[in-house]
Length: 317
Image 1 (tube, helix red, strand yellow):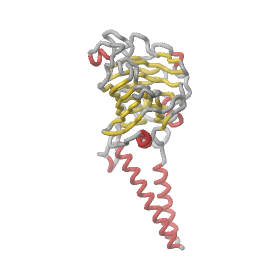
Image 2 (cartoon, one colour):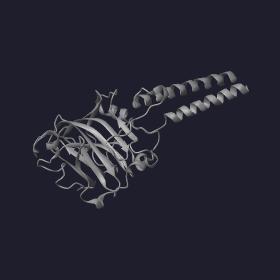
Image 3 (tube, rainbow, N blue to C red):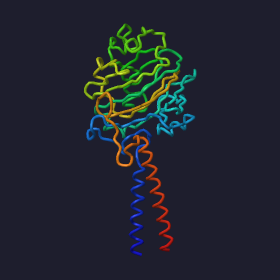
Image 4 (tube, one colour):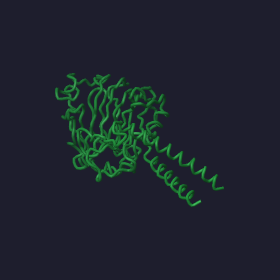
């Protein structure tokens, strides 16, 4: 009987450990098991990474569930249609009745000790169509769930804004001569593709660009597009660090259709994050796959432990 009790205790402990391993943040792309503290992590540590590879979701609700994102409707009704296929997130918010739409990626509690320090985020976007030339998608930082946040908008016409929103006020950190705002030969669209900027053009249609924002707590956001510096904080510095929220949200403006890939967020400010290291048997397995395998093993172990407990209880009875 003592031997059985000892075995039973071991199995219960195994089940507890497995259950703990399964707990963690909801979003599929998170790289840390619990709310990270960037001050205790090397610069370049990945906090979030989503490349959509090996994933499939045919409609919006399934895509949100798959990614662990949540509709955020504190300001507008969620109208964008989402799907995941071919290693991309497809965004369709092109209907005439569409509204700016928001999807929460990670909440303020999870990111508080990341986004109160230097950090970097980036994503790839390919615009496919728009209702007018000022339409865009973007990531929102310091998002409060309604209408306060910091953001960089790279628009389908080929320019953009480095700015903050406070209610109905859009306050620009950029000056008017940086490549992100310029309309002459220094314009970012001209530097990247050789096209002259056109207010009424859709110069980024069917062109993939990588937007990277290196965020300094002291100096604000610096924007790179395809590796070219496009903007830094030259104006309204008094507006920086005025939002006591840390969530990150995906936004699609109304009247836009786009494809998104390779969303990443990491600690510190750098061109690239640190390489993700795997261990032991998973040494040759990509990080996302390693996570999936670990989860599967945990689930299996937990199930086995529970089954064994049931058998022992029956025998003891």
